[in-house]
Length: 230
Image 1 (tube, rainbow, N blue to C red):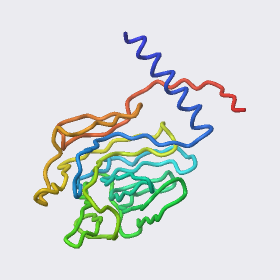
Image 2: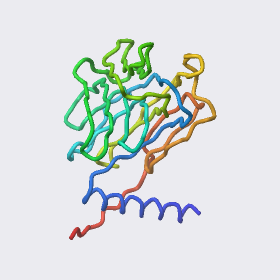
Image 3: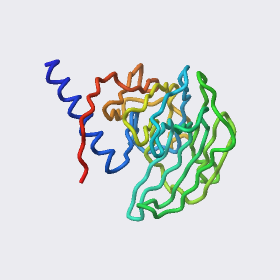
Image 4: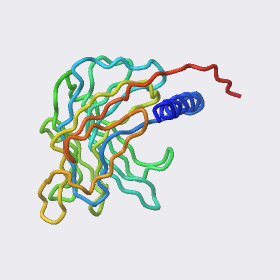
């Protein structure tokens, strides 16, 4: 069984490396709560030691809480978290949103110049619907951005890590006090058993509870084979 699993891991790595030669990709690990909510929040950590990211394209990692809704016009979402690209030394806190995203279409904005997050620290990130039905993103207790006409009803909420452009990038992030805003009473409540766990190999989730978990990269043995891309 171990030999079969090892072969599967090797084949997956080889295929994934072949894929990234023709199309850059993303991998995810974390929790999705498909039951509609009016917001999401989590304490998200940075690793104790700086991440050594692969120097390619927009290679990096981001760790965030986010809303999500999809209809005939495209995808709508708003997220807040921290991100780091390979050319940067310190993670940045950021907020990002898009209305009617489809391919290169949609109304998109990102803000990431207001604060950093030091290594080995934890910051509280929020996205929620306010009393005026606007959706607002907050980091470290400060409202950074609000937008009208994002979601007209409660939506799915996520708390995940995202690895950009190289599956060789490291990952080690802890999510704690992950909560959703209950549309019935407007109270933030801990993620419950209505959670779907996302684990895109080689990234995994160490689950302490539905509202407390760690996303990380599994230890793998890579074999580099010559690839011919026609």
